[in-house]
Image (cartoon, rainbow, N blue to C red; front, side, top):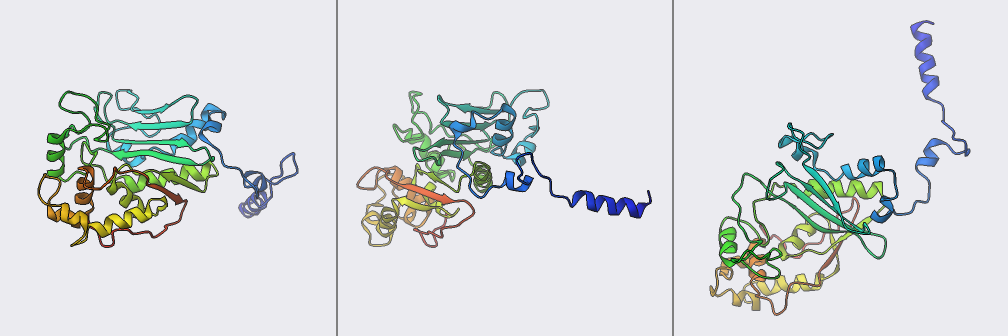
Length: 296
């Protein structure tokens, strides 16, 4: 067979529509008109190799390579497994943790996602930590008791040091600027699971603003966020409470995202930080901005 004949044969060969025993083309079988969302609970029913393939999507490959983790084996050069997926029972929540060493105190990156009662997915926690940055023990009080990142009890001394180092409430180390990439991976997983949207409950004011700037809108709490913004404007009631009475209540904190978040963490509002629920449609930016021009 001549080279020209081989070329024509190859074109004809790969131009054919592959038909399954059901009578459907492969394209029709892989991409039907009607698809149902797949939950994390249903994911457990898939073959293990398919579960691994799907869950691997969540892993920040560039960070793993940067810190010497093989993105295929998920191990370091000495064979230590450095990526862990932890699920609760009956499997409605998954937590992903990537560490640069087996004995590392904090993960390089972590994300926790869960099923909602309505068949959607919810982001419960997402963060990254620079292992080479100083650590501030805001996660434990002076007695060593977990603070739940300052939401139950506080280590004020550590918080002051963290704030002065440029961190936000709840941060134990400087981050790796991986938030956008982690959310992009989250959305890729969602498309694989036939999910069109996901929700999140920001644990702090600055987290809500970050979610806004990555395309989220509000299911609940937008009016409250706008009320907070008004209160921090010069002459507002929250602005007036930035009286220097604590390190977290300095007047200049009204003008930055991080400053406002520390003041709210310090209890400057009339009520606890809660009742904020956000939603993100895959591939869409809602364009919500409750702190116009706000800098970090």
